[in-house]
Amino acid sequence: MSGGNLHLPVVLTTAIGGGYGDAAQHSQCLYSVFAHIPGLKIVVPSTAYDAKGLMIEAIRDDNPVMYFFHKGLMGLGWMRYPERSVNVVPERSYTIPFGKADVKRPGTDITIVCLAMMVHCALDAAEKLAKEGIEAEVIDLRTLVPLDREAVITSIKKTHKLLVVDEDYLGFGLSGEIAAIAAEEAFEYLDAPVKRLAVPNVPIPYSHPLEQFVIPNAEAIAEAARSLAR
Image 1: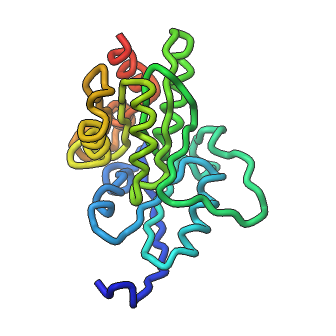
Image 2 (image 1 turned 120 degrees about the horizontal axis):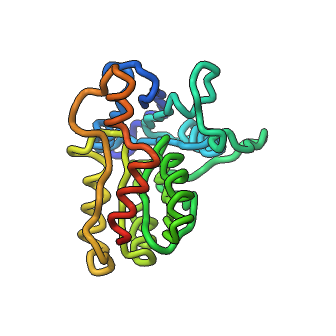
């Protein structure tokens, strides 16, 4: 609003994610709410390496940045976390540019777009699918705003199928945005309709079995991918 005269080098960090029975008040992934507001940059890392590089980039940015970290990826002693999320992190300072997605696993048969904990679920699913002859490409967006549209389109042109996985709600969120990009900019490359897998539009349950039912997991991702690959 100030035409660049006012700088707001502010980083707001907040926790997201469920899977440990903390009910609706503490288990939501509401990054799409803030991504809807023009001017805010939205960062959602999935690994320790990305977390450091994106945080330093956020601190050096003159714009307001919202930095969402998933509680299931923090290495908390009382909470199970994917071992692959704790990767080698250099002691030196380094940055990861915003708006640059990362291909966490290359593939040729289907594109899976995701972020945060869903990256690890997608990688687990991709390992299962590979044993069945289906090679999934896993795209980690890393930031919602700015969004690496080109990475999504490039992958679709290669695989011709798209599955979007999100721990946020299905309605009015990331999965719909990615599906729209595919429809508007890569429709002619799609051999099947875009498939979305996300949390249904209900509060995250406190009950562990119900919570596990509503949050996408590796098996649900693999089954959704199989339905596209058939």
